[in-house]
Image 1 (cartoon, rainbow, N blue to C red):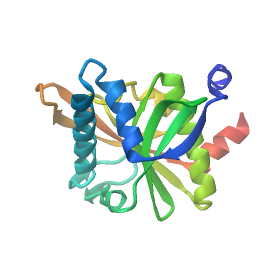
Image 2 (cartoon, rainbow, N blue to C red):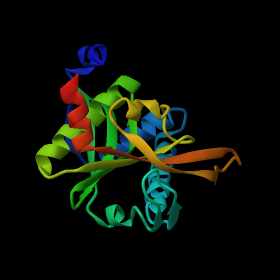
Image 3 (cartoon, one colour):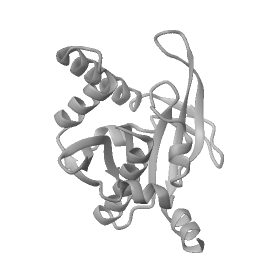
Image 4 (cartoon, one colour):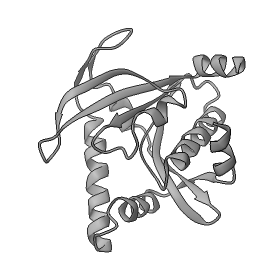
Length: 194
């Protein structure tokens, strides 16, 4: 983790407009397409992510189960984007929102795994300042969409508490959606010991 900090400590996050985030994602995710096509691809990708947030789930959890529209409250709340910058260059972005004492973030794209982890770390710290009573940070990990395996979030204190394995992507391939959370009190207690 110290090596990560040395490589990325100069990077800074700030809130950005959705258009800037989607332009970055378009260039990052679809570099071989014409600009207009790549932007449409990024928009469609985000629409699908947002529609997933409105779905009804039957989730079997580690501690308790949940039936209902688990993410809908985050869908309804205002949505923001954060960008992480290397000087003036945007090198990563993520969507986020708050509800009560919880923050949800997801749809993360970055130039590298290290940058993605730095973005997550700085967004968590910013979330604590914005919402001092923040208790839980939640996210999703899609094996068919996320650029990095699930461990990049696990290393930063997130744990999968439920998952869906019966999904098929547009090519018919299986994928897993992991519902993840980071509990502030547990994370801070564990980090005090180290």
